[in-house]
Image (cartoon, rainbow, N blue to C red; front, side):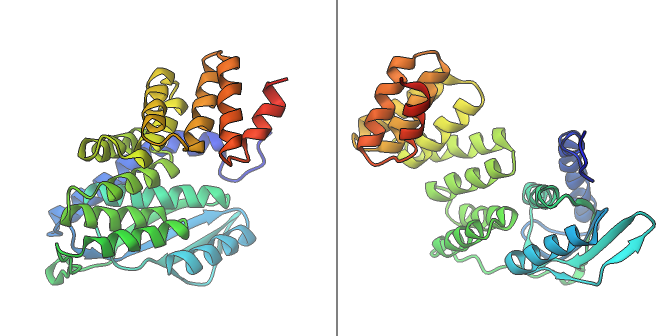
Length: 280
């Protein structure tokens, strides 16, 4: 029996609905005069059956997201956490992923995102200064946010970098990674594909797309990506390790063990665990 306040079943069933709701919120913002990439600030509400859970979520979001929160309020059998996010530049897609990141973070702490609304006035819009000569600044800001697990904000920064420099393959790949971390696997794949359209031999994107394909059960496609990485970088231990996992999923135990052994020789410490478990 699931004793959680916000169950896995509820999380899964509400995921797509939360995306749809976010796009509707953005459409209403546009109707009220909001423009793409204008800065907007949102208030947010989370609920849970425990003040301790909300306290933990609040502490995490204050430290890593720079959110500000009011005092918890009890309403019958649940508690409410209300706060304000920092101003960020939004598009419809970026708002959707920003919301989904909060939806996922709430779930991690057994709290549910219960509502949000824009506080900004479209008649006095302001914008980030996105100099086309320095998109790397926004890319680096995105990397900083990844380190804090603030995937929604990271996606926004990578989007700004891409807007300034559409051929920045690193930003496409990193944005895809963030989408994958909040369970938007197909959207992540599209970003990996774009990075590889820019540079077909970009090994970081090949590796992560291979994992994405493996997770989706597309084992032949995953093997193709890992094989290409190994062609380009013969000493890439992670490519051997991942290829071994995919071969194992295909029933090729002998080939998997050979790849794990090669990965181990190249310094991939996790390979030993697979060897111990499967290669006796």
